Image 1 (cartoon, rainbow, N blue to C red):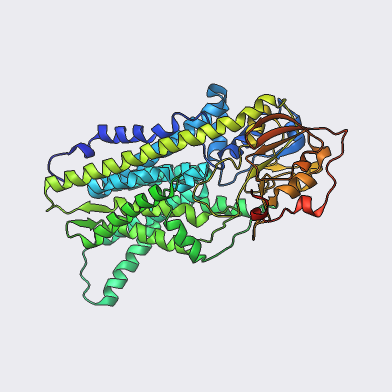
Image 2: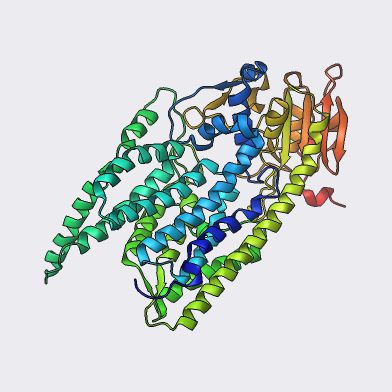
Length: 540
């Protein structure tokens, strides 16, 4: 691609965009991502089980080869150097940084130079799956983007033998980080190889059947070209055929949920701001279809169509992990975005305007993410003051307030109880316990039905189609003899009689930490105590 290199196509610009992508995560001590504190609790057991043997009385941690080990493995060498919390923070920062470099690298390889329209895709580095705390998944997707850039670069330089040698171990490493990233790379590499194989032979067919045969041949040759990525299939079979593997796959073709996922690829905090930003993305994609000055790359257009097919076919739950289809939506959109490019006939002034608007859009989103993360971090700091009053090794049961409504704003406190496990090596009832999906399972039998996730989530009344318990039922029925302390984190309103036998040691607003007085009985269980009236009857 001849011509002058513009400012958004230079290496310094790509470095600057990667650096800017890190800004929202610099201030928070702990990245305020929904599930991340829960994972950090697991890392603490993984690292400190031998130094704190009581952890192994509560939790069973066993190393096994599963397709979900990204942070779990990387923490091992990093934690002794930086400490657990800083190591986690550095790894989380790497995710948006690598996502930005991966998107721009792919755009450069496909288009010859980074098109101005690609800048609109950069805010997707802070996608909803990242905010949800799916860190192994998000890291694998960021790595997959960069690996796909490398795949295209090696193909452009006709280094196919080298590519096969390199991607045999890389595909396995990516699968170990998270299965989803490996599958994503496979779809992207296959679609790109199909276009390459189709274009390397002259199109001489006149009839539809001859053209179909030409594409069928390209399909077969693309499959052969992608064989270096196939080795993890064996790892997948070995993993899922294990005797202790649990976690079901289900909720297929939930079209209502899939449509909602398409409205929230960059969902963060402020609904109007996030939806307006998403509308900008769809407007740019629509312009690619309607505007004569913008066109799509066939390579990435085919990739986006393949990803759309996968998105439609994916169930909501895969191997016990929820939101499988939701996780793909932002990356499907990102690939479609970087597939756009201004046509050569567009004036340089028009191209620079598009680049300036794309950069402004990215900076505005980064500013919003930075403010949002700072606010979430403040709420973390406020709640974590309770841990100053919690002794090391305490048996802690926690209850975090939830609502029955699917609200755009998420408190991100759902797994904050695990920071008691991470910082104080206390028992936390928010850990996931699903053999084969995580390395850790709970085995603290005295906790009974209050031993693992989602027993930490409580609502005002019973929510339809949810496992969460009402706050009254949880406070009245949890086995007091199994625990030493109760931690309430912004709980729903509850009858104060439920605090009978609990000694307050810290309060901040509605949040509180109680020590259980085992010498005093709990409250007498009555129907009105466990099942409160509707909120309208209690509010005044």
